[in-house]
Length: 362
Ligand SMILES: C=C(C(=O)O)c1ccccc1
Image (cartoon, rainbow, N blue to C red):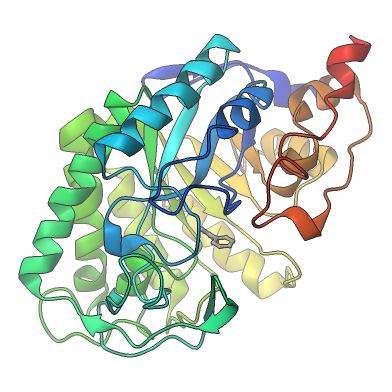
């Protein structure tokens, strides 16, 4: 598995290995969207990753859909993130922030309280979110006007500017997992009849405008994009994933982005031949640095690089319970299993209290 430890260039930066930390929602931020102070320790412990991609971080007040997720749209958010990026850089790490807007995956009791979610179309998702009362069905959204979409494009650029101010090495634009930009991409969630809906080109328009605004603000070498072509999360059916993502990945390939990050499978879902074939096809439309993600162990990760399928592998749950994952891979040390009870919400337990055994053993 040594191929996982090969350095590489990645857009404007260099990475020391191909073992990346995938975005992980942990629901431990303050209610006003300020990240928790303990996050500096949590991310610095994981600085051995070739690249850390933060938990999904809302780029607009209405982009918040769950309790205690962090934001990056206020000056106080930027100040708090500065401590985190400083700690990661002091530990020798590199970190991108994932810019998120939940769209209709939101309950109106979440701050800003009483505000309905926004979406491409005024149809509620068959989905749940978690509020202070626990899991609740998502609220019925209202349809975004063209003017509001244009304002959100500018908000993505502003969030990217905030990310640079906060000391991040770059940003990942979240276009996956049934959230706002994914809702625009898919035929099942986007029923608009204006220039932002209908054809594949029209459904890709807003996501591409958002990516272009971020590129214009901070440069393509500091921008990655995440997609989930076979996404099952949050009720975003799509008539023709192969055609849609061949086009979307092809458009992204023209922009000189730092990377494309694809969730290829999901916890508990099957990896059928048909699904693998779609992923292989839409993978071919991309021409740059490719990060794969989805339940990899070290052996399958090394194989993904050896076959040329991917240039790096993002690990989610393994990085929860193995802060030193890249070192464990280098030293061939067994991985610890994460405790699912402390994935979402809570304090230090299950967050910063996992052992970095190899660093003591080294
Ligand atoms: C941001 C998330 C994603 O991209 O799936 C998320 C949100 C809530 C729980 C788990 C994951």
